Amino acid sequence: MKARWLAVFSATLVACTGTEPSPPSKTAEPTGWLYLRSTEGLYAAPIRIAVGSGEIEPIELPPPFEADPYYNLQDGFASPVDGDLTGGAKLGGLFPESFVLDAATGQVTIYRESASAFTISVDAEHRWAPDGSAVVFERHQTSGCCSVWVLLHPATGVLDTLEAVASRVPFMFGWFGADTLLSQRGGRYRSYALATGDTATWNLVPFNPFRIPTTSLDRQWIAHWNRMDSTVAGEGMVQFIQLRLRDRRLGTDTLLLTARNTSGATTTLSESFDPDSRFLAYCTTFSNIRIRELATGRTAKNLAVPFCYALSWSWGPEGRPAS
Image (cartoon, rainbow, N blue to C red; front, side):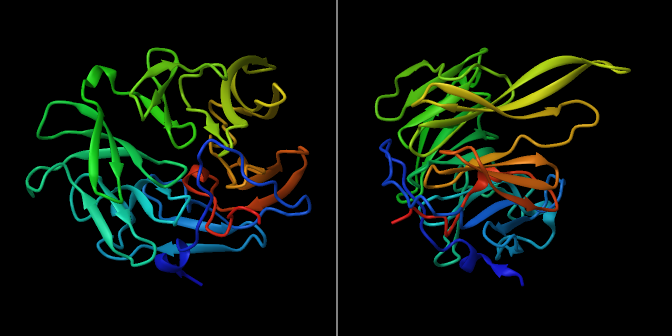
């Protein structure tokens, strides 16, 4: 049965303050929903899968979203607090514009570059803070000359420019807790403290040029990727990707997955921690999600999906902290 957006994004997930959540029940199994794309297509509509049952539901987006998938989400991320969705979408125009869809009311607010209908920015790479307080994204200004790095505060509608010099706008970025941004530029990771604007080299895991590390809400666990070349009989040199899991408390770095990264690729770079920092979901193949219990290393679930991609959108809404 198709789920309306109001029903899909209505519950509350854990906020990330940099402190550890209360320990969950040792017998608790992973719950809630994982959000992902329905097909390999760039403009595929989102779906969700129930972690407990494996049930898959398509998600219908209300107006001003259009029925044609080409105009739907270019990227997106569900708020871990209230299920609101942010992202870029062609809301009747030619270019992706930033929006926030309120899960409680269905209201869609569009954040254009200016009030002028003739000034349209091209927005991409939206990433919602783990506490739901802000959205960071890249904006290519059609009224200016270049890309800028922008922070949106949905509660107030305020847009802060983090970086206005195009040559310093990060190539990739994400979050490390709710108060720090991670970015990749110039062959290294850098942190950006929102409170002060201070930047520093971030080297908790080895650098790779193609994927920002994903961090659990308690910041203990870091999922990160690397590339390696290996000789394969009859094929010569073949490139592989590896997903690794760093435990900052114990100082361990565990190999989770090795997959081809050239012709014959078998999976996508897509992973997500649950809001309790107890489980990690990642794609083992194009059609399978594996859920790993972090404390024990056991495989808690394998879930069959039509296409495994964009798990970083959200784990929720019922994946809230254990009481």
